[in-house]
Image (cartoon, rainbow, N blue to C red; front, side, top):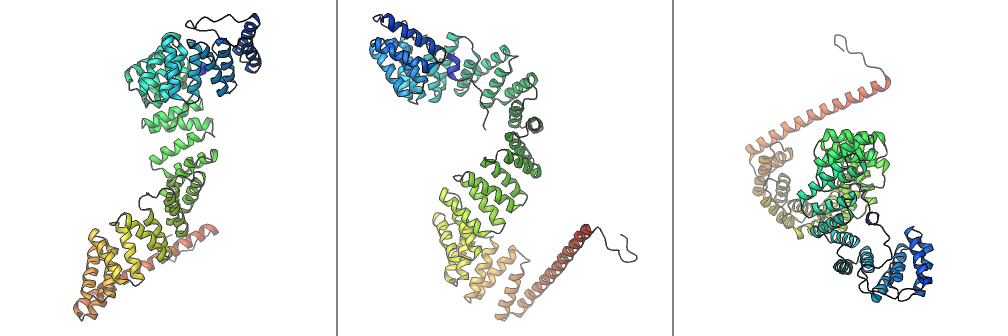
Length: 546
């Protein structure tokens, strides 16, 4: 689940620019010349104002005038960092530290830069050394905490966030970071206690309450999160983002009516909020309300057509109500937007198969096999599509691949047996089908094809027993009765033949009656449709009621 994060960034908590003064632990250095000091002061003032481009030439002047000044090199490093020149900034910090290894501000800045560059272990080394020399360096504690979060060392991160709180006071942003780390460190009670304290002390601040609710929701504390989102909604009513997140919290609490109400309100206020429509579609789907789910997913697709998941879920609902071609279009769009997701191509293949587009289905399944060869039954699905197309040789290739990976795959055995029977390889068909019925003794189609195989090999007794097995599984199988009639006749067993013929004739008559009724119903429906189009109706015969 994706939550909208609005946490304050690290730089905004502690400030991006650190003054260029040496730390208390810095070794005494020769005082720079008045001109160099003036350049340092002017560059520092401009940097404090965020005017880094103007500050850069003054910092370079200071370094040129006082090449042994660690302060000047540290200042230049800070400015280079803000101008997005990490390599130059790192070089400047390291020069400052060569001049004064005890300059903890420069070491902390180097550690922060390395952290930003993703060099976690070198950054950890520098930050720990900074804190060893200057235990009250709040920025070093803060950056080390961020590093530990990235390293998933949450308990240690929580300790350093707590240290920053002691040094810099209870800034809400710091408390939020501490709460997040404490939860991940499974320090649930301290985290909840800090959350309660933050909520009480900021009871009228919707921004703080909203961010706290987001953190709690991320940690699956949905009950508390929903209470806070609801409170924010009271302080700032009709805010779509608040209502959206409130709806998600209710959804996770299985309070579907409340969730639908909050999300619908968010969508009414901001109709193009595709995520709200997406969530409403999920809720309708959970309730098996496929029509409303389709409607909501269509809205989601309309406002965020680039989201493959939205197209996929729309297709899933269309598939659920039997709209195969529409589902195939939606799945196809999802696969186009995210061609690396095998689920989308697999779903496309299923929809195309149901729509009897076997060529397209085979192509979609082959895409799945390329993306994820371990997909269950994928070779069988490809082979079966080729079988239905009549491409029996191509079908055999894939079906045998399926059997190579799973020799007891009943459906693959059934299809291989059927194909070999059709191709006249009766011994091969018999071997596959006998294996099938031993694995799946209630597979009626398998027994029927095995009976046909015995019959074509003139193994009459085996064929009779196999057809009788078919009838034990499906007593009204008209073809089994007819084949038994022929076999008993050929074997000069007239009494048994007479019984099977009678059953066949009875079932055939029932099929004729069913076809006549189906034809009559279809005719009546067509007539009704014509009446609705013309606005007329036939007059019933005399004596009949309308």
